[in-house]
View (cartoon, rainbow, N blue to C red):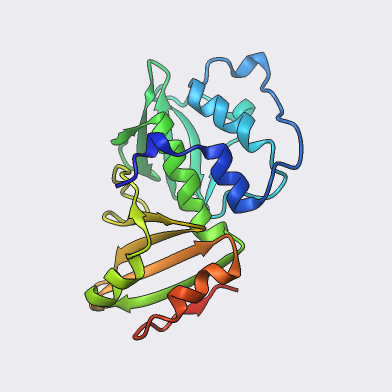
Length: 211
């Protein structure tokens, strides 16, 4: 099991999206009230011109505002139907909820949450990607053999129970197939096309390269 605290996000982003293309952009003093890990994430992300969020959207720091319930939304999903927020009175805690639903506290602290969010996005945003549906237990074990699970806390979005794995040059997300379908769905993002070749040679898997 990989401890999320051992993951260096700067190194991960460079491996996934290439070296930084510009100097970091600092935040204005008006953002000092934001949680320190969130400020640091935005400064780090500013070093890449490439897009690093695909299924979610980070709200620009200067546009984060307190809502009527006293919380501040800092990230939403791509449809705007799911949100993540923090409470300034307890800024290291993260809460999630569907639109118009009550907030639910997450098991991850802000720093771990941001590592989780960044790596999960890379599953979909890596230059090379592939996926397979309804993979059997035996085949799943073979797929995951060169990887280690990352010890992230559970999210309710997009569905509870998915797991993140990392290997040399790729990241993967595994989730139970939709109700009525057997097995597991696997999504893999790789930093090099050749990295996927070994996985695609595993028999019994109908891999589909992402466009």
